[in-house]
Length: 114
Length: 112
Image (tube, rainbow over the protein chains, first blue to last red):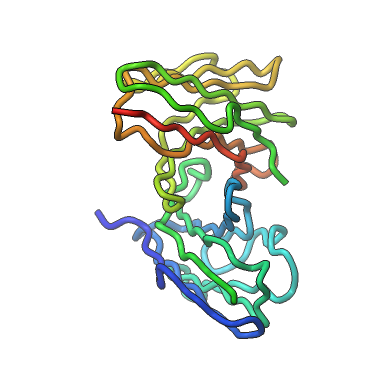
């Protein structure tokens, strides 16, 4: 079946601009996660959705970052006033309810802020 | 913050040899997992070992877990060029089992 998909695969933007990154989870997966991976590092947790609500957004670095999942399926990660330090690969994952440790990852969106 | 720390940071071997990567972590865990990542993109889940397990096998993979030392190892036997990738360990902790904490990874290069 189809895996997690993320669009766009690459995004280049200028400092100060607003960007939206989209994640389509595996059908039927109620849990959705966003991670950020900087060059040479492992992924770092940003936010976790159970259904439509953000159950844990403790990993969001500051209030420029926001994520939504209005219908409990597709999620959008929104970054306002982008900074060069936001450049990273943004990974989305999904899992079945109750199977939190079996997360299936998408290919990621590589964000470059010039 | 990074909980797991893999070592070595980079490993280069010949096809057919075995590759061993290690991971250490700091706090109590529920489970430890190993992931593979090609070309800095999507992560592929390899194997999960629970905190009450000591060893697990899957094909050419063997994972051990020593909770007293807070460490795990991943052994890939009879390596192939296609095994070239970065390997990460990830832990999930009690009370936040949905939040995976990854190490910095080991870059494995298998030379044909």
